Image (cartoon, rainbow, N blue to C red; front, top):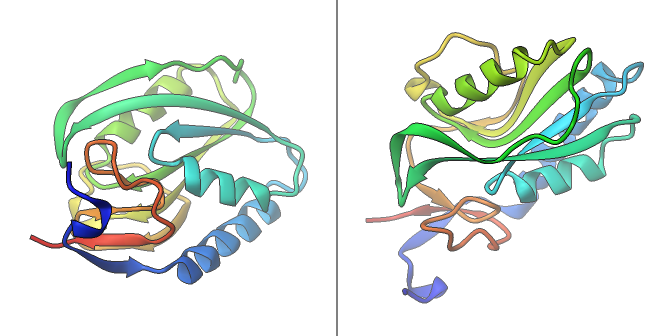
Length: 176
């Protein structure tokens, strides 16, 4: 295993910009849900840091639940979505906001959306920290987008490489 410092990387989004993104998204969500009691569905493992920071700034009555999905092996998508930890919350009639770290092709999110919509939710929105619009292969809206990016492979702030580097306080672009 490489030492964290030996990975060839450079800062892509520093912790100050992350904080600004999170605050902006929280303000929008607070405004949109001020008269509702949403359920936030956090997608593990990648979204844990983003979700923690975002939810600390949410000031509306809400519930939080978690789901764990897997579609990546190392730095490549496997093309299939596996549910490793399922929902334990009744979402029927609820306003649901999915919190995810990144959407690129959108196929993982499409699978999750289909599953949640089948539970007869009142509304369903997505809050994502990073979005790759040029790779997006689906046709559904993403209401809360933190930052649109091109195609760097990133680690840190929840993003990983084989489970490593999630704990870094900023987001780094991995260099070849």
